[in-house]
Length: 391
Ligand SMILES: *Cc1c(COP(=O)(O)O)cnc(C)c1O
Image 1: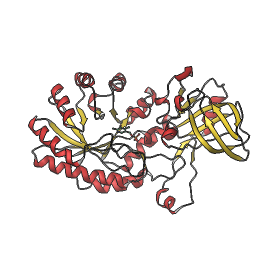
Image 2: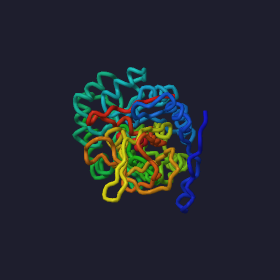
Image 3: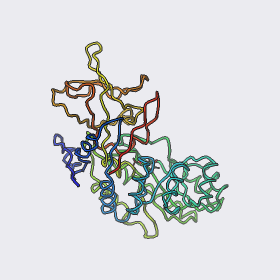
Image 4: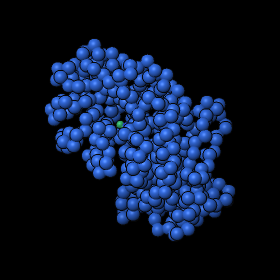
């Protein structure tokens, strides 16, 4: 298997601190081999060997932390199968994700229900299928789960800082310190097995200290739990491990140093898990699409691709900047790039520096696009879903 080392950025001292490990990407030659057979519509090409390597690298960096892949990042069954073969556990948000994993033979004990607010019907279904562990971050959700499954094993999602994450989740989920005491005392009253703590530092988190702060807060909650007579035995340090796009990232080894130091004094009775999504699948894949037209509008150059916000390239709308690779060598000029639909939100980037000679029929190659692309794509406006090709 051929791999190339992604460009190392060398312009700031920040980079010297964070660019400590060469990150890998799928080699473009695999894309070229697929295109030789023709092109019909946008596609993602995924190399499962790279996913396996990322899984092993994660395990090697944090031997005490068991990874449970976040299915939503890329739920392709062939991707899931590679992770099952590597010994991964899983984290789900819905019963469709549960059914998919069960159909692939995943033992139900390896599946954690990590969506803090679940419908009653979904909890009933998961309980009937044998799911043991459920997250919560409110008194109401605690009562809901216990009313359906009194012996559920429960973990509490706490709020942590999301500073330095490209997708700050703070505010949507996670109980604050002021609410934790009430949840613990309600669990004691209900004789519920509240046995764990979790947090999520936010996706594409480039500040490793957030994990340290989360773990310190979790330890505080463990102490509160023990003082109330509960028996904590799970620490779930969530997802958020970053991958390289255009900005420098801390390597998993640097993040692991901080996490390993923070968990060192935890009792061996505490099982420690994580929920990496993006980290495991992103750089295993190229997303490929095509320029369908160009235009000049009021002196500005525009180009339109056959995949946009609705076709899978949606994370740009939340601030992610992809590297864009093309076959053209012309001088770089500012382009505004849009998707093929007629919706005004379907604009991918403005004033992006791309070769001036790009034109109809040219291919666009987006490296490290294996996470949160095809999983988001819709048929809006009648455009087809991207293919997923697995090698
Ligand atoms: C989405 C999600 C993850 C995975 O996040 P990444 O940033 O892709 O690592 C992990 N845990 C939970 C609860 C999530 O919702």
